[in-house]
Amino acid sequence: MDNPSSKQAASPQPYIGLPGSPWAEEISPAGSDVGLFAANSPAPPLSPESEDDLRDLRSAQPDEDPTTDISPDGVELPEVNPAIVSVPNLRERVVELGREKQLMQDLFGGLAFAMRSFNNLNQILELTAFVASNLTGAEGGALLLFNPNGTIQLEQLHCFDLNRREQIRAEMERTAQTLSAPTQVEGSPSLSVQVPTLEHLLDERLQQNLGPDVQLFGTPLLIRNSARGRLYVFSRQPDYHWNEHRQQLLRVIADQAAVAIENNELATALRRKVALEKEMEIGSYIQTQLLPREYPQVPGLQLAARCRVASKVGGDYYDFIVIPMEGADPEVAGSRHPEQIGDFRLGIVIGDVMGKGVPAGMLMTMTRAMVRAEALNRHSPARVLQHLNRAMFSDLENSNRLISLFYSEYDPRSRRLCFSNAAHNPTLWWQARTQQIQALDTDGALIGLESHSHYSESCVQLQPGDVVVYYTDGYTEAANTHGERLETTGLMEAIQQAARRYESPQEILESLFEQMDNFRGRQSKLALVPPQDPELLLQEDIYVRPESVDDTTLVVLKLLPDSDEN
Image 1 (cartoon, one colour):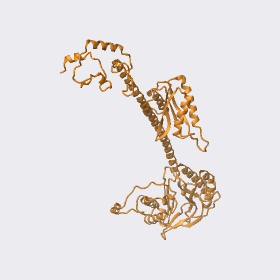
Image 2 (cartoon, rainbow, N blue to C red; image 1 turned 180 degrees about the horizontal axis):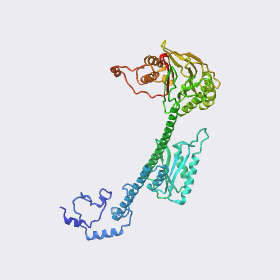
Image 3 (cartoon, rainbow, N blue to C red; image 1 turned 45 degrees about the vertical axis):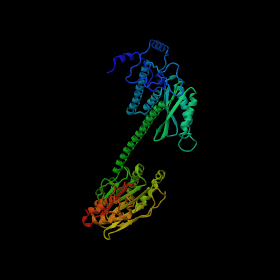
Image 4 (cartoon, rainbow, N blue to C red; image 1 turned 135 degrees about the horizontal axis):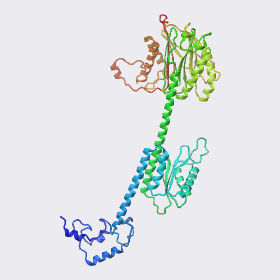
């Protein structure tokens, strides 16, 4: 238990020094083994003379700022004993530090709330300049951005002195305009100097233009290690000190502004992508509606077709055109119900526009319309391609695109197939009698390559049971995980197997696509048919099928045996 007498004796003792201070030993008695605040040792009583001296010393103590930074090394000590600290002033300093801490928390909280809640980037950046000047104790703050087009832009300016704000704004805008003058090199405008030289030069020019009475401090806005601007604070106070603490605060605020800018750019890019995806979906829907939704009913003939696009909008297309013979009612020309017409020919066309996406899809739509117009005028296949090339040459030349196209006409009465080819993949004809495959091809250049190209024409006599396969290069260029391509030989083998095994053209079509998918999804060499043995499946490495790099279109035509004709 503490001695009451000791407490009473210690009560008049003044609050002297701090343990470990450089002057504590001077106050302690020489040779004493007990510290100034030795634990559990009573303070010695003061004599009446000492008490009088102490009262005189207190009355002579000036009102010093307790926050004065006193360093024990190389600093001249004040004349008055610094060990005596004014307790009320210390309390005021503690309260002041508490207010500064609360202000810092409020400002950072407001900035964080703005980044969470504001959808407008300008509101966030405006608050950034305000928070930067308040947290660092400066008179104002400014945010300058480096735009992608090579210009420097004064994005935000905050200044407590309203009378000087417009002057400072004018000086900063003039400096930014001077440094962002486009160069004389051809192309888009760029900054007259490169980052980081630009940052140093910008600091110097702003300091010169604002005058010697203004202290200017800045830090970069870094986005993915690339400077996208600078955040400044400025002050005219002569006693304004730029210390490490204020530097750190400014860097933190600049980082928050950089995050806000990057988030805004990502959000803008996302909105643009969503809008593009919506447009692509609309284009895909329109393109799907333009493809035949049902097959014409042709005596002695069955049809099957499918177009698999690599993207939402593709450049492949196929079409079936019912072409009435001379004297047919023009009201039913182009109808998909030939029984309403009588004598007719069936136009079968397949094409591939160079490239993918929306541009290829737009050209495909235009090509479809022109082919149908030429075909319904009862031109021969070669003349159809020749007219098409002349009509589309200028548009294709301007768009740097080309079109390969195979056009044919089938006559149900004679079973003759006449065709002309504009550098498209030759159509493959599987003959049921010999079970051999013959390529159907003629001379002709790509649509859009030369304005006066000439196209030849040829005809073949089909027989019951024959299969004709039209295709685009997306099938033959299908690759497996080794980079091996299916090629035309692979397609011919697939046709041989499917034509012998299946009766309907739809089953043949399904088999061809299945064999292509099996080839692309396996690491072995040409494996058109997956092995039936489960153990054999486990012995081979199975990999995820590579993404298709091109559109794939197949059209299968099969002549029915005489007994199956309607």
